[in-house]
Image (cartoon, rainbow, N blue to C red; front, side, top):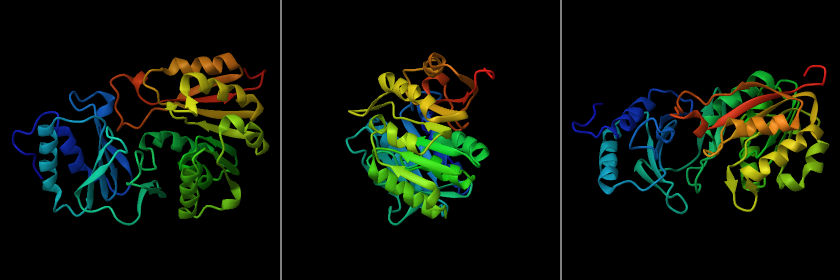
Length: 315
């Protein structure tokens, strides 16, 4: 395939990313990350690969001529057998509607990552059910969850749980208010032949359920991956500290916490201060996003820190 002569500089990396997409194999990944502000003029665009589907997401309304050129360029993939579907999602519109630029979305689709499968929903309002930027956090669980009791807060569709359980975790507790997301999480465990007896699903408000959550502990690992803002349920500036303050009553003598922060308005120091104020925790490392998520300013993108709880004589 060749690029159309005269293709705008801003669109060229987008089309090239799709051309590379079919060569990436089965594993899901981000192909183009405009939102990291490394590509001037297309900060509102992302392109994801969920074989055999390419998902293009627009986070603001583009100029009509730009959108027409994008749609015209997509025609070059009509004969590419590796790409069965190209979906264009308008995230800036209410309900985040999508349109098919190639093929029709029908049947079941999955994200595949290192041999594990996760159910996707391309007809969902916004998120399809699997967050690609969390790949390196999932890798930490692959490496460290064996034999441990894991608490997965804001579990969504339970991808962290699937990875932890497949790595040999003794117990995983998933907590999320969204029953529908947890139901997808149950399916994700079934898809990967995970023994359900070691998995729990709590469809509760975290802030009203500490007693129930504590009952399954103490935990050796906790994953905290909240939304930046969710009307009526979570405000990162006010509520993150409430979760951190509950950790001492939830954790085993020695434990680890994966703390994630998605807000572009808050930096790493926000997390560091929360754990510093709590005391008894040591920062082990920054868990970097995948290389496919380049950021011109790392403090604006996904921020994840791995903390370790220490006993007094260790600290």
